[in-house]
Length: 113
Image 1 (cartoon, rainbow, N blue to C red):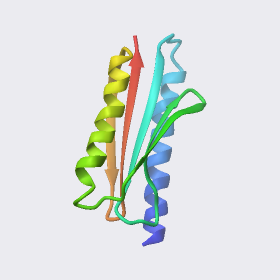
Image 2: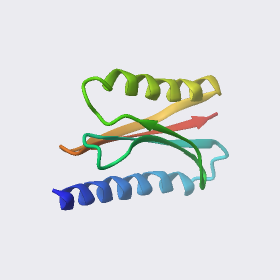
Image 3: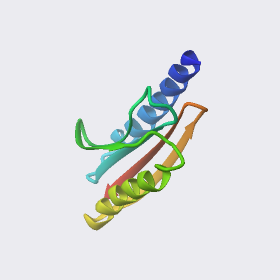
Image 4: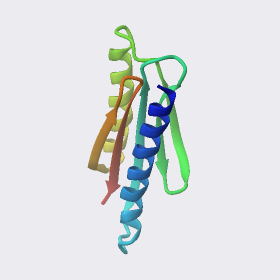
């Protein structure tokens, strides 16, 4: 089970890295913000939102472990984080996600035009 978790995280991380680095090959002056939402279905792994810009983490928001009582609270925190970027003039470029029986990972890429 732990091996599946590690393999899944590795696959998501590699695909995200390749996706993000594809933007570096273009001579685009736009600013990109990358958001990863990691929702754990058990308490062994921390659930959180990580907001990055370039080489630095600009914000980290703790989420509750995915339980029926915490779903709404987590959704509100995610929506608040995404809406903050929209208010700052960023537009959603793409998003994708995946997971298994242990976690759910959703990535968002925002661009300031």
